[in-house]
Length: 139
Image (cartoon, rainbow, N blue to C red; front, side, top):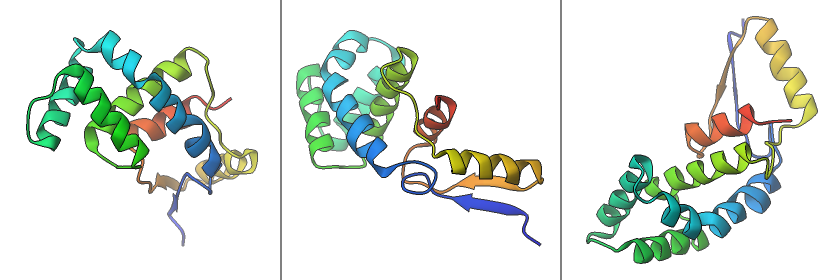
């Protein structure tokens, strides 16, 4: 008897192009201003410290931002980059710049499985935070 469902996000419950064509460019476009504006806030400061650790030496804020943008351009999956992308996406969702994308048939099926008592799990390379943002801000 099936007790749980394991699904992916990109290309399964949501369009691959949403992440590639909406979320990643949005984070790149807003990275510099977001970090400069929020550099003294704990989550951003922690991410900047983690950038220093990743490169092996201290960077000023502008150089850290340049490093983050380079990682975006290289499609790197670096922890401080993912953390900052999540914070930027949270602001974008909150400000109404975009909404999460989930296929209508995926929503219907997930709801049906949940109503049937099945446990639902996601396996994804995206951060848990980014996954929650996407599902939590779907129109």
